Amino acid sequence: MTFKAKMGIIATGLFTTGTMLTALTSALLLTSTASYAKDKDHKDDIMRLALQSSETTMTQAIAAFRSNYAGTIVEIELDDEDHMLVYEIKAINLDAGEKHQASYTLNNLTEVEYYHKSLKVLGFSKLDDEDVAAIESVNQPGAVSIDKAIEIANAHNSSHIESIELEHKRGLTYYEVEYIDGSQMRRLLIDAASGESIPSINRK
Image 1: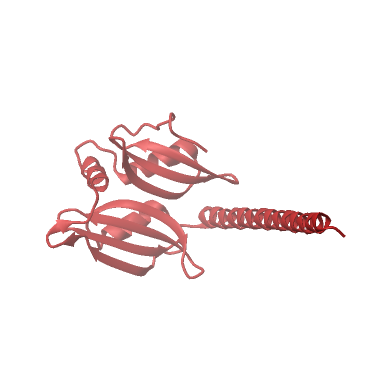
Image 2 (image 1 turned 180 degrees about the vertical axis):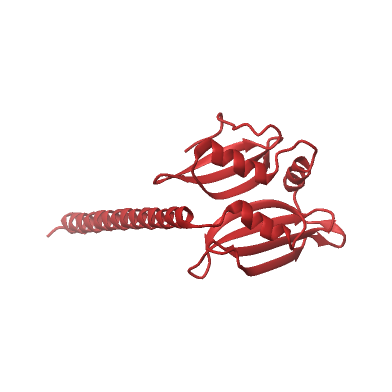
């Protein structure tokens, strides 16, 4: 067999092996993606059922948090913590330069975790300008509180809120709400100044 023929056989073998590896990798990626999507759908279903059967509300969780901690609430999220669904609430106290974070069980609002952090280093704030702008905006007279944003979101969709977060981007302060609508997870943006939804940048 000539040298050229031998090289041709080797090249063909390498091509075949490479093709098989590519196909196998693609199959694994597709399987992994499908598995992730299935797990996420399962998690959303569990959260939806839990919210539907719960006798507590996100607003009540806020009240429990405020009875102990001062600051502007910037985020609330329904989360799975040690196989238990909890409302995780984060707040920032600009005056004290502190962050408070606490978790409350969905079934009876028992506080199960608390975290505190100083946001100052050598007297300077570690918060970025957007975080400060967002908090200052919602503390202005007439601004939409996170409580009101939850009320607006519930009236707008009659659905179950999974999370709400205060944001400030491109000069606009707004609440980003993720909610479960039927079997779908959707998003709603609410202007913190007017309480109006922002349809131009809302997306499913």
